Length: 112
Image 1 (cartoon, one colour):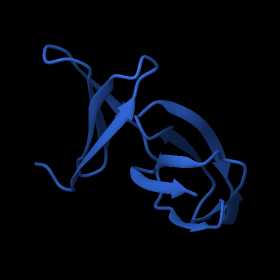
Image 2 (cartoon, one colour):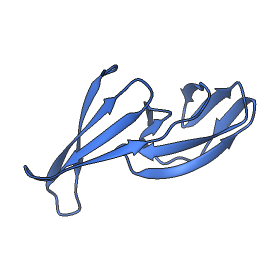
Image 3 (cartoon, rainbow, N blue to C red):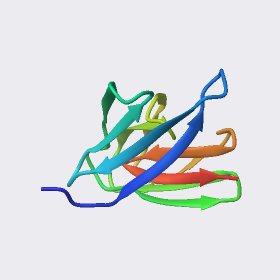
Image 4 (cartoon, rainbow, N blue to C red):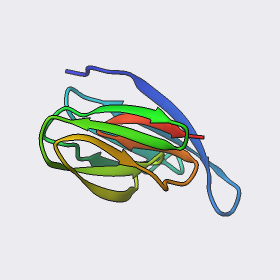
């Protein structure tokens, strides 16, 4: 059963050709589909944290409130693994991410 939204994104490849990408959010897992041509669709599964995390973008930093200590993977806009961070119980701040859009815990966040 599909719960969530379908996000359509376009990304420029190094040779300047646009490829269509979409993210399907299931109940607890997001799948990123990347299509370069009509015949090949690649689907990747993004993992998420075990506990809920409250996220808020503050300037170019992200405030992460976690009820427990845990590990949180971060993915780029096209679904590529970028970074893994360890969260302590309580409030954590994540600084230093370059400008762009990231999937954190199956949620799309933009750093401006």
